Length: 203
Image (cartoon, rainbow, N blue to C red; front, side, top):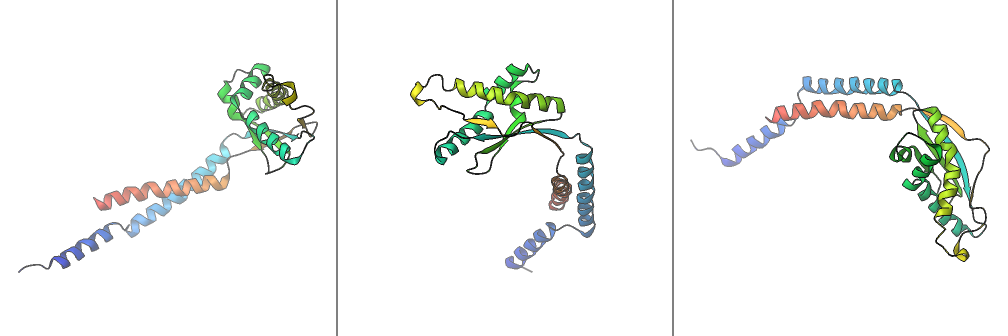
């Protein structure tokens, strides 16, 4: 007796759709894996050593209009996060760390159009974080002046360009965010067994 091709195709499609679904036991395993991995990730995030941040607040201004100050602030951020800045900090501080390691430690934080910029030195070593932060302002002055050496005197930016707002830096400790660790654990713990069961079912 001949078979209707449309019926065979429908049955094939139905079998393919069923093969993409996880069974009840497989779903329980995936959910359990998500929860267990999330708990493990949160525990490890709390057991990991803290990172120390030394933050210095700078104000950037030239005594001219606000647009020029904004341009200077953007240039300030680029200089602080440049490799040349890290090299100057390493040279002045005599650090054993490589230029790339020091460069990775230094970052900036600034609100749009704000003349205030926070220069942050982050490290797992508290003393290293403080030492690198202490070299940022003198290194920044040297780098900024060096970049104006080839300019005519009339085109150089004169007057105070940046200065530290507070007498002492702000020191704080940070840890890996719990919410991110939990989210990462849920995604990883659920994705791995899901893909495993999916490939097994399709096979």
